[in-house]
Structure formats: structure tokens, C-alpha cells
Length: 189
Image (cartoon, rainbow, N blue to C red; front, side, top):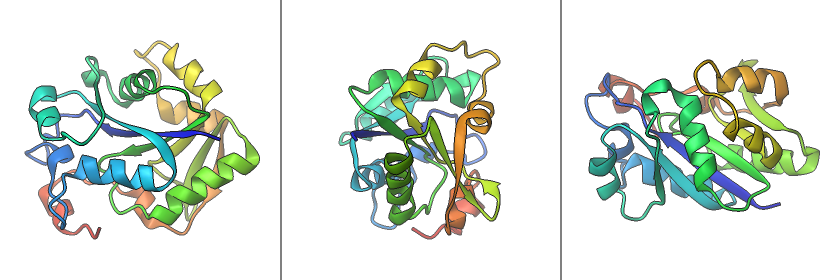
């Protein structure tokens, strides 16, 4: 199977006080680029970073990343997933990783992709101790359904609750949602 990846980084990062996509990792790499590299290493042949707020400013600082713009970023994550899916080329499945779900292990992403390849579901939702993670894998068929959906009242979590197979993993980082400078200081990459 051919896999693609999406890094969701379109929000305004108001609680962080600066764009999360550009937060410097310990290696000095912007966080969005780090997350994109993680998806590529996990087996995604094509990875796109979805930007929205401060698009030009952020895009110019991510020269080594394929980016796309979500003009409707203020409507929420679903429209960013749609923008990312529309920017991708041929794929059988797609891993979705929010930029602020930091610390997810490479092994977790690989295991999710491999689980999807073996089981061929509509979607996979990794879980930790029974809680749904922020990452997901979706099939091309579901991706087509998502790109054709109206965004006003659609929530990705609702679609995943209905269509995804839950996949337990031993990685608490899938629950991460880093929003503040204090939370960022405590991140281990």
C-alpha cells in the first residue's frame, strides 16, 4: 500500500503565543518539519503540512516541507484535513498527525500503518488506556468521503467514532495536545 501523511498546523496558536509549527525542537528543526519527517520515516511516501493562520510567514520558514493552505482554517480541524487530502496525490491510506501531538514514537506510527495494511479498515484510531489518541489513519475511500463532505457541522472525531477500528498502543504521547509555553517546556522529543 502507498501511504501519505498530513501534519495539521493551521491554527492560530493563541495560547502558545507564537506559531506551533515553528517551535524549535532540540535539534533546532521547526516542529512542523520534525513531525513531517516522522511521518516520512514511518513510511509515508508523500507528506503535506496544512497551514492557515499566518500562512505566508510560516510557509517561508518551512522551505523543506510541502505545504498547503487551508483558507477556512478558522472553521476547525475538519477543513484542515480536507485541505491536506486535496493536496495529496495517489495514496491508499493517510496518517494524520496534529503538529501539537508531540512525542509520538516512530514505532507507534509504523504500527498504525502496518495494522491498517493488514486489516484494510476505513480508518484506524490508536488508543492509549482506552482513550482515543489525536492521530489517525484513514483509507483512500474514507478520504474521498471526507473531501466531499460539508464542513460546517462535520467533525473528524464523529466520523472516526463511527468508522474507525480502535487500535491499542503503548504510547501515551498520542493523547498530547501541547498548547502553552509551559506544556512545550515539558515535552520530550
